[in-house]
Length: 148
Image 1 (cartoon, one colour):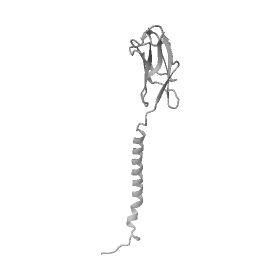
Image 2: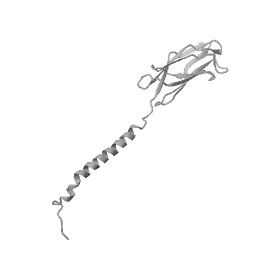
Image 3: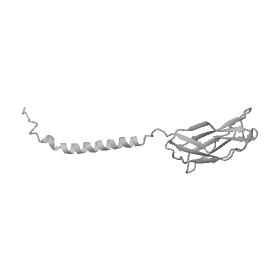
């Protein structure tokens, strides 16, 4: 058997450059697929906040209409959230209004013929806000309603 010296073996070096090029291309293609998959992964949902132009109002007796109320929906960077779905309930949860926020993150509503809970002289307007990419917001005690 003939002993060959690897330092003088030129046959192995002939295919090495093309193999390196092919493996580099395959590696880059695989990395591209992995990065594309990671880019499609949804990040942590954002947080919504709701603000109102009023904190409380009064109605005559136990049934009445609310004033026009403006809700503003913002995210954690204090930016308005347009297109968010908003549902508002009267204190007795029998009357509700629903809609979406405008380009400024605002939703204006008026609850008509709303009632306070039976036997109570006060209650609260509740709101739920939903938007894709954000956690749902439920606020049970947003606006206080009193009977006078």
